[in-house]
Image 1 (cartoon, rainbow, N blue to C red):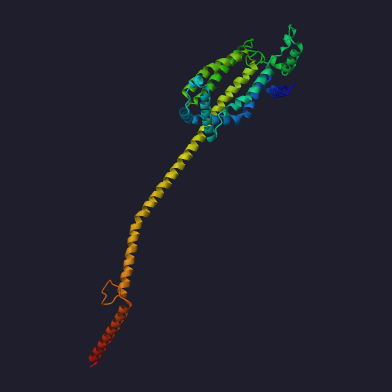
Image 2 (cartoon, one colour):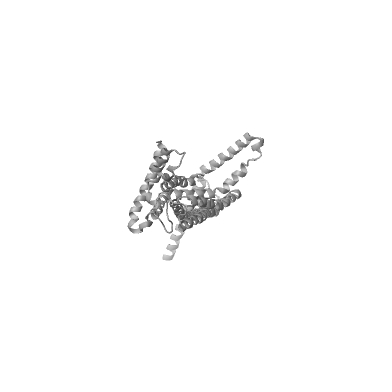
Length: 368
């Protein structure tokens, strides 16, 4: 047995163990419907573990949508003439490579992974096919045919058929056998489940495409085509799949619809808060620039008056010094020399002595 076979069988054994565990827990409550509800709980368990990746997928998708205008500009800037594919393949290849490098640089600049949204789907595929093998009926009945490898058939029967033999007789709301197919006559409930699978696939696909309104015209046309082709194709597959697998599929679609609704609301609310914060930051920067400009204008207006005041103060000081240091000869407003200052001081002293003498004579006359 190869390493891959060991991993594959281990995954199937793990799914079988989980289904048995849920069936034992639900047996007192659900009775004969325990296997159907076990498949539903298994689906919810798988999707619950994938919620962080689903959130990342949604954010990656939103980032890709926001980059659509930039991508369109790059496509116009690095427009590649398709006729070069025939006339000059080397030039066409070089032009496409240059366009691809520009796109990858744009993705790295905005921290966007163009394939990040595919991870949840990739992780679910092994679980889906392993569950398909777990629910697949045992091919033991084909052992009586001729021209077959009996050892191979026995190995297949032991690998796939005996994990949950109860599924061949397990019914679930009008479904006769969860291991049977709708085409094999699993009952009216199986037909209704296939129709529900088609409807939920269509709605979940439309819900995802409705958020991608900025896609290019060619891409929108392809998405519109997939919107109708994919549900029909998967409905045809569901018609031939074990009903237990279809039940897993329908539960996955219902979970996806609810999960998208919740995540989109949260992501859009966060984007709205971020946009409000950016708008408030822009307003704060605008107010700061306005205050700075207003403060600069006020300072510019005050400078001439301050200069005038300083000029007046300087003139007053100069005049005071001139008046204080001036003489009768220098006249007002002119500063005298040191000699003139001495002469002026002497004149003032003589005038003061004459005034005192005159006052003394007047006093003597009054006494007489």
